[in-house]
Image 1: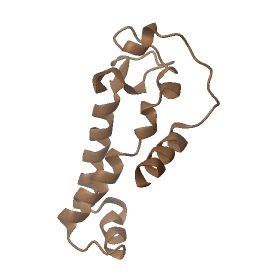
Image 2: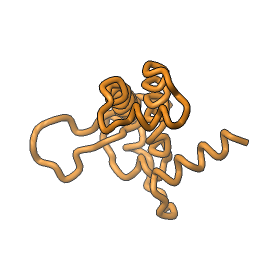
Image 3: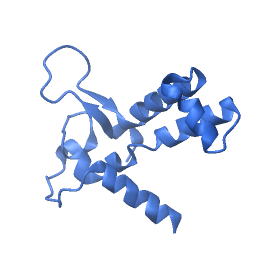
Image 4: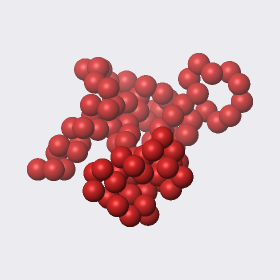
Length: 118
């Protein structure tokens, strides 16, 4: 299945303009780009905190923060999350609903990182 069939944000319940959903791959890159800019401009003193972590170079700090943020919603790739919103343009639309234990996408993301770290 293509990464272009996973949504990251949807307009469930919203009635004012805009797209029905925002692809997860684009959402992750958007968040990373904003995080990069926040470090470069030192919004909320993020650059200061990253220096305390030992990352002195602002460009390296911005790239590191962007990389971390790019992974922030990795748990949204889970089928249990993807079935929360259905749209005909997404492959999961035609699949039957499965009943999963309620686990937040953040927890699923942490589990992915734990498995990758092994």
